[in-house]
Image 1: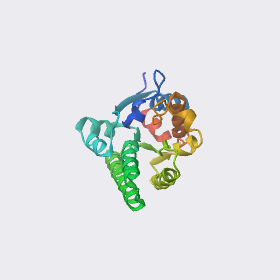
Image 2: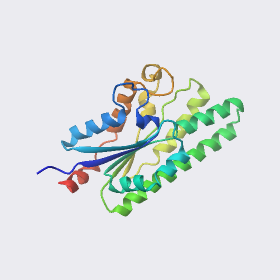
Image 3: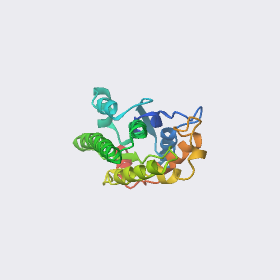
Length: 218
């Protein structure tokens, strides 16, 4: 008898698309394969992602009937978002360097991301099925001490989203000091090596919640 696969739904921006990996797999595909090896169990992947996606667009995406249905059925969900929003904030800060405005912008992005995560989490709670949600901290493509401090604060707050069903992959720490080797020629997206490191960060979040997922499909 064939086994019903676990459903992995990947939501997000160009990091979920895999932009910059060229013909190599992105982190989503690597993470999926890694999970199949860990569980010795098949996983079906559904990806909803767009290059340049920003928070308002992801909010709309997760409210679409097709994506909501996928979220409801999903066993594993990854979300990548915020990089394009932070890029805009940083460009605005360079034109008008106000620490107060920068801080308010970061807080606003964090609140928006939490609203998305909470919406997805509540959808899963209502489905009455075991599930796991994974987010990631953001690496720093800007060689600037102010940007570094701002992103350290941002990522520290993002890590506080952790719960019994939500884990945050610490990509920032694994990229720190290695950005030149792990970023694509555009200096913004990861290269194929960077995507392997991102997949490793997701793997490092562990699999404590995953045993009930596999048991629920046997």
